[in-house]
Image (tube, rainbow, N blue to C red; front, side):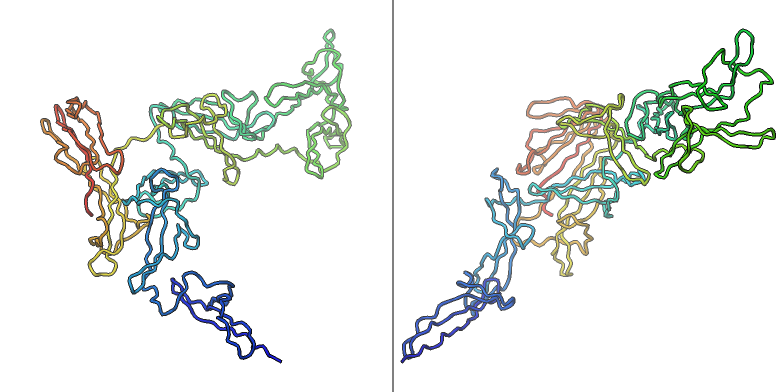
Length: 592
């Protein structure tokens, strides 16, 4: 009889490239007693931190723990060409493990979120430099309609764009609380001012409207049209007849007592009450004669005239009342009050508006005109501009409608003259019709370093935005981190250069040439852009095409077309003639 030895299980510790440990699980098979045991086999591995067992071989990067681990990890930024145009359009990062023996191992790659692996499509060389940026002025329109201007800085890097909102001082962060859009154009004395809406008016049927008025720079007021506040529809021209103050309803009206008079004898044949009914546009819809004693329709026998003096009037008072039903519906009817000789009310009879008997079924009271829906309409003049040229295609009005709580409910685009709805054609966009005058300026981004440890060496990079106006005055707009977050430097210091290309900047320069003075581009080997403007006279510009006249008030500009170009090349000579010529230019490749 033989017996079987029990199989044995053992574990061994291994280490991975990232320094974490795993336990390798091995098992020896069952053999007959006295026989040599076969080689053990690997059945799986255990993560000692989570306790999770994974069957199969150990991870490929697992090895003996006596192998030197990572003494340092390095994150390297790479660039990827994902669309096949040969240019970098996506940035990603590689995490490398550096061991004491000098070897290194790539741990993983990622783009943005380290927990999501990134597989590059076609790695290419990165184009290093300061990200391109553009600052625009926008308005944060608050719920009460107040526009708050602020600066929005767009940063473009590797085909992606981000932005940051700051106050007009260029430093204080701005939090948007309303609707962001183009700021309204300022008043222009060559064109009418922004239209205003006069509210508080209603059509004859009680529908609220707003009359749109425009006042020009001479103070002359013109009426452009009117807006139905119940539907929001704009109509050019005058509003319909019958418009009056809201609450002054004219759906129908009753005259006083008149007399049906025999034209031959002058005798009074009967007393008559005349009821007038009106359409919603204020025009007369119908006229009905009513017997004031019974409320029934009256058939005229003679002529309807004012009653002769002394004609006995019926002891009845007719008023219009409303019967408010349980569901809130108000039914209009007529009530005739009877009075005795002392003027005391002795009873009443109720009729419909057509003279039929009526029995109230709800609460009877004085009719209350319907409360017009409270809506505010803001009119914003805009222009439809061509994308390619910026030319004005059409002048329009944006109607922004707000409810009684101040919330915007809708925005409609209509033609400024006809009020017809407008749909933007392809290749166009909305813009402000008249831009405010202003002087151009150049904005330069300087890549600087900050000493945060006190050793005199710059260890943290930051960006300083500097503006140069036409007079050459320098204004610091703000300092920011490389991600364009507000940054306050501790102690600006020279940047430490460790084998990488030195940081380069663009320097702004300006010269003012008096009559006869000359500026030559050949004297500036790092030239990137030039702008020449003639003031109070003319100048001469000499290029490869020969000399030409720079006319008074004319501005001429030359600049690099691509960042990969080294500099502007001549010949380019600018000479002041009968007036002054200002030359504004920038120099690239300035080591920071």
